[in-house]
Length: 154
Image (tube, rainbow, N blue to C red; front, side, top):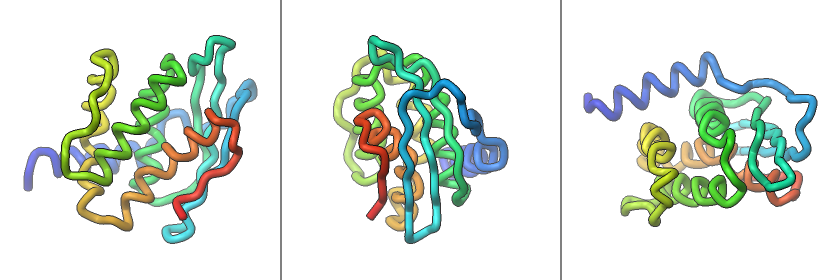
């Protein structure tokens, strides 16, 4: 088994069993609900944006498979303190990584460490049905940033 595959399994198990930022923050000023009808995953993403559109806090609640939960947990860890533009850049790079074999579009140097931490989820690319599980929280976060309210993988 490759090192990346072992790390993938460890991270999925760790974040799936002990998700970070799994809570409902009382001071969130943006939220969106996401649904993956094929797998049954449901997630709500809560954001507290500053007037300068920086993510001061991010959390989630919901139920889903280990991949969905782990992806949401990792996402919340990485997005705290990021600007809306940085969050959108990470979304684009993460989505590309999950759906394409080629390298992700250029990211600002300041986001490379965060993107490197997401590489453990690149294995979902081999399982198209699982891509929706991994990207659900990210699509939902984007909907929350845009004030859309809801997101779906369908």
